[in-house]
Length: 180
Image (cartoon, rainbow, N blue to C red; front, side, top):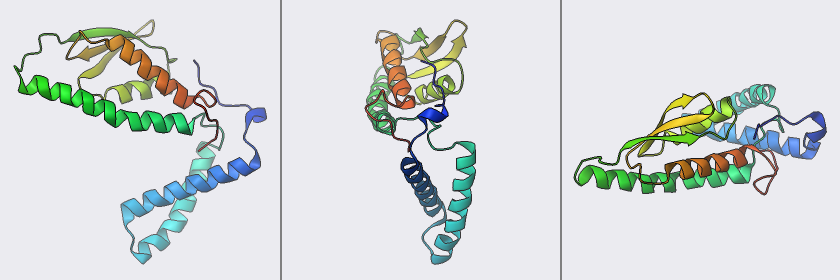
């Protein structure tokens, strides 16, 4: 499951690179507008700011090098709030109910992602889920996850979430391969 940058033979055609550059510039400009506001002066200053940010962004991560599958990334992003809401309701029920965490515990979950940025990003994402918190990464590729209800299939859910995350990082596995 190692995520590798594509070689030059796998680089997207020029028309897709151009679209990726324009898309990236548009997103950076929208971020500027969201932070600075819509006053005319702010909009005018945002154009060169977004251009500079786009230039730096392209130097740091050229189009086609990100290795992201936009469709799978979108599905992962849209599913996160739903899963968080469901887990949050469960946490609230426990907190407002008896207040006792009789089934809390630590669960060992195998890590399928290779060591590095992808694994660390996944663990950070997993820590956002209410009711579970990765607390330690063991040698041999296991994460210890503190949970409020160890009766649930935590290891299975953790593995499924890792697979969703891995698909979002690997173009071609999520039904799309365009750079965004």
